[in-house]
Image 1 (cartoon, rainbow, N blue to C red):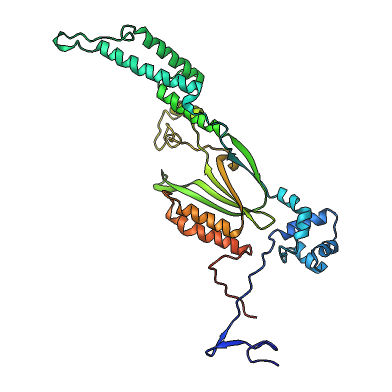
Image 2 (image 1 turned 45 degrees about the vertical axis):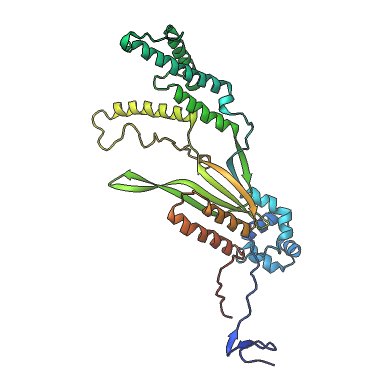
Length: 369
């Protein structure tokens, strides 16, 4: 029997004269890299029929996969992924710079060089104060100030200054009048903390299916004052063969410690070169390169992967990935750009939907048959 408005033998449901449509079944996820996987299998000597037998589909279906006309469902190529998935990952993996866990609980103040620098700072402060008292006016009323042994030995100040120059050579590989003991302490402390968490190489397999870049707006002078968009952080999402995701959160690497000092030294030499080269006029030119001498200058490299320091999270399923992003945005004291707050959650969900994952709150408008 054929019911009006319904399929043969299946009456449609009505309520109050309104037809009620059944809830659509969740879409089964498709394997985005079907074509690449089939190509690897065929290059290994399998025929399209053998691939079809392994995946339990007709040879014509495999032909459509090979030509890129259709994508296989995840469960259809499960056996093929077990056999060749590792070879697919080799072509889609990436290597990142990641901070390792702390190798030691030692504090900088407990290190040999740290103790030496702190002792030198205390001694220099004491000896400088004594030197000022010696040069100052005599006390009023004939009161004689009792001097410490250091006050009577100005040569001790010279010995401390000589030790400071030795430490400048040890840390900076040069004597420098502007590098006082506080500068040396800051440089060595930064390098000590970095050494406690050394950088290691981490390889993440699976294709990158999502990218998002956080930018910092910086005023620059071109034809007029403009805002340059400087990339400072990124999110990259890898998709594994089992449908899970790995989130790579990146920040730009920064020159600190001895590396920053060497960079500032390079800029100073370039300043001298610029003054010589443009001695007939520097209109519109900044010969001091102040835009490159930031407090925390970025690491620069022709290969972009060396410019970023990464933190890796996961693997996650789609729900856990969304939950992690929500925690990120809700973090206390996190200064996020208004544009990022409005766009990143949408783009992340869009990626999941387009890869066949069920995302809560998505309204689907199905095409009519």
